[in-house]
Image 1 (cartoon, rainbow, N blue to C red):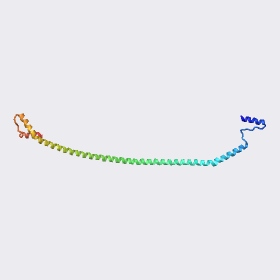
Image 2 (cartoon, rainbow, N blue to C red; image 1 turned 90 degrees about the vertical axis):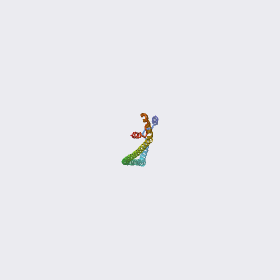
Image 3 (cartoon, helix red, strand yellow; image 1 turned 30 degrees about the horizontal axis):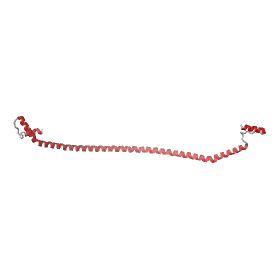
Image 4 (tube, rainbow, N blue to C red; image 1 turned 60 degrees about the vertical axis):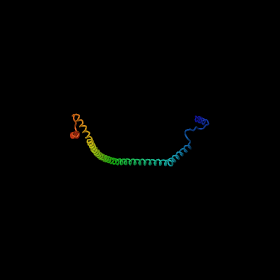
Length: 176
């Protein structure tokens, strides 16, 4: 709105109206010179270090990626090697465990056999002691049994039976 008022005021003053959108020739020269100077400054002074830093950074990133890929390949190779070694070690461990089991079983068999021998020996000793005690008991009880048998026979028969006469019969019964 102000421009219209300024244009009307200039027409009344008798001057030719100038177009406010078109710049003056001196402004155009200074604008072109400023643009060219700024273009040269940016293109030849400021942009090359930025591009160089960008390229260096891209090269560093690519080198790091290559190093990471190489490290990953080495890790895979090392992992495969460790797995191979572990499988060998596991096989050896299984063999050792089997051998230890076999040795333990043999030792167990040996100990069981020894224990059975000891038990059999103790059983024989106990059987011998029982037999000896039985014989001692028979010897110590023989006179009493003879007296009891003679007394019982006397009562059954109604006459007196001598214990020494019944001795051979009592011996036969007690020995059987």
